[in-house]
Figure (cartoon, helix red, strand yellow):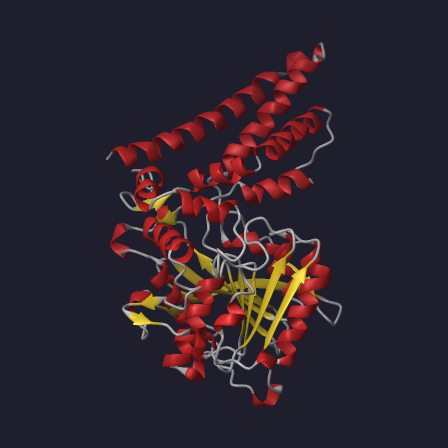
Length: 435
């Protein structure tokens, strides 16, 4: 019960700070103060505006905000987001471009379940839409999932990915960004064993911790320093009475956000102090660079406790993927079973989360795949975010990934398209054929 109280206490702290910001903004903006301009009041109003927005965004799910794209015909095409597979812990969604023929390239973008919503990949999706049919794994906030839906760990995550790949057919190219890279590799290998005909054409792994020990970072060192008992005691809480998932054990998004912020505390503090000055001088706007970044960065979601703990224990501590010892429901998944899926790894030379060497380790595990179907790329000036959403992605990495997809595609007339266009109901990955 004390964990539930702690969860509600964090929410109360967030709500109080949002209220303080709104109050400061209202008081300092009282019309009578305009008669005698005072820099202190301007600063107070600016502080209130930035503080209110900051704490408000922590519980708001961002919108995709992709309303249309310009097609090759020069016309604007509206974007409709369709649910292809619906499941308790996450959906498979499709960005349908209205009035456009289906593209030859069909891409499944596997979003991380690491504290942020799938909308973190908004710019990645937008950059792929003109050239691809884009599908995305849209994970749900664990606090909104009733306890009756059951548990969800990395084995369930792997089974979900297998179900999503089955639903889309084998004429598919999978791109996994960051955290899901090891599990996407395992899901592909399991499909290769059970249903070779359901394997995708290619698999691109971007900045993922396939072997965290290959190049240790602060993230991997943290996983080594603490015990599982310490993690469970200090990081896991129960969802409070306000949400549908009341009683569910989670790793709270607010706690994850505090960890994110503490890694670069000085930089974040300077960013917010600079923003307060810009607002006080009237130089800020609703969608300026600061707000665009932090509106997404601050929007966090809770992770199921089982998923968080099993990720730390099995991926980072026991290195089950790196040792090719990962099991799903008692079955050992052999990554060497991948023999027909081309695999490419992408890393950033300045990545301080999944440093170069961690992701490319996947190629050594693919003992059954010819070298001609393996590829790797290290982007010289890119950090972690830049390899999938920044300038480095747009200008350098994205063209390479599209070339890799084209090089491992069959002629359009020979393709086996089985992707459903209508919503498909599903009871969850626990009923998967792979279970």
